[in-house]
Image (cartoon, rainbow, N blue to C red):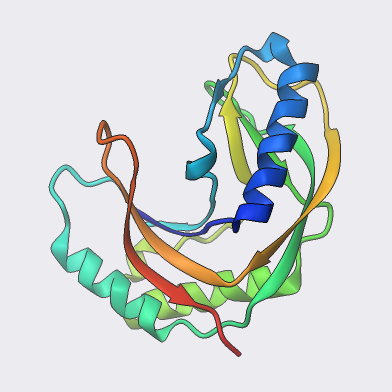
Length: 175
């Protein structure tokens, strides 16, 4: 379960195009690609739960209701890998917009206020995962810049094996 921002159709199309470019240039990493409808940027991961956590969902929804942040634009312009087992191939931005960091900090405050302080993340590396590779990309791959107009935050439940995301909450950003 996690809070995220999801791209609008224009940004989703640009992200898919960037994934296609990486697929052409770096087939050697033999990646497992993410479906375009699942593209997102995680703001805060709340955890994995063997039983649906009604109490956490209630508190997370309260945090979403109390979230205060303005809409903004985010430009993603390169693909790289994170380290690890099946290293993620991720789309990132040379310049992280201040409003994105402000949104993340505001969400953390709302989570603490809602009683979910143990679920607050202390680091944030903005990215969109495109694929999981068998190895890392050899370097950075520039892509045509994708401007994403971030206008809402969602609370997502990813029920493993159920084939998709369940949106538990959706909050528009407003000044």
